[in-house]
Length: 152
Length: 402
Image 1 (cartoon, each protein chain N blue to C red):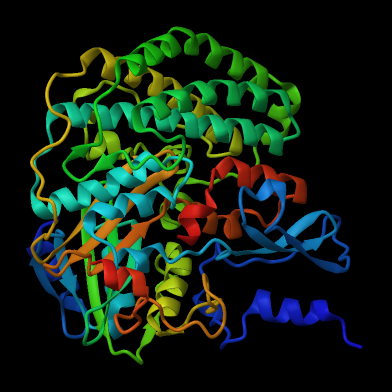
Image 2 (cartoon, each protein chain N blue to C red):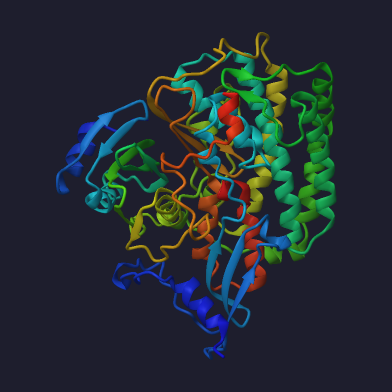
């Protein structure tokens, strides 16, 4: 189910810069400033919006910056909401674990694989790869083998 | 010479970066070490795994112990990282199922299905009804075989042995069916964008019907053998309690969420494949302890058998593959598709830029969230109970590391 755009928009009016709420193929997406993401998520988690669960979190290299997506869910209203913010390539990802503890490991993974700095996190280490591995999910990291290039 | 454990402790348990502001820590997260009798003993840092039979793959726990009691625990993963998300950016959409099989390798059908649903949603491909029913049928067969692995190994974690042999007897029959239908016993590659690989061969239907004639009695025996064992009950009752608030805040899904009393099941709340036409119950727990997780999964096995019967009896006639172009080029867009895998909500977040390969492919692994709650619930338990709690959460490291 899709949440009401006007309700989300008015609730997020409290944060600096507000939010831009649109409906895309993904669902209802609220775009906020990266520095305001923890505050925005805290508002969305509380009553009356009641998005109690952070289902997932991921980062995407758009070619110009890193887009971080938080996927929230409310069980009482059976609604899913996506919160997006963009960070520069050398940006700092502020942890939201005090709002949603489920972000602890996905944040480590996102920061590691997209080359961001993780801040306000209790354990900001690498999760999956070893020291010295480049940020693999950047588009600039090409891993296709010679055979794959030849056979396409 | 200094004690190397001091360095390990300093680096692994506190982290080397700026310390977290303690005023920000919610009350439930703060871990205050307590001795068993009020007297502190020397703290011992123990590495459990990655090569340990009880860690279900290559999970490594760095546990700080006060005697037998766990004071602090950190999970360490990545030993199985193959870069599935990055590899997907270099594969065509038809090839995503092959990668998903190697994520949660115990229940590959569900991973393939999530990837296929995401591609179908982007391309708006129509799937024939028979393919929907075959997806549900194979999904439930795979769910039952996956739960049987969990049932067998969970007993092993608690010190029981016999149930493992009997669980594999049933699983063998299920893998025979999967082999007859898909040609594979593990990496099926059966669910494709637009439908499924092939129709049921005649011998597979006979095998499924023969299996369904005996399985009810076997499940009763399984429950009596392990669940009726007094030692097993004493090992699992009341430990590893995950209450409703913890389960929601840590993003748990599947049986781990339902054992805390939250009635959420993707098959019922956002039906896909043929689940909208099937009749089934969602077993729920009350207290959220390891015993509840056992009961919920045993209930799910019975529901899986119930759904297999409905699928094999109600299988419609027709094609098993819709009209799909040879090379898939979805329009620019972003979708999230989810299925209920044996471990919880398995999601695929797919971003397309209009070319024949995904721009970004993200795999929402339910085991990752089930594993990170361990750091929250293990402190305060005995080391022997920690093994039981890990087993009760049913994590598969293939999808945590991806």
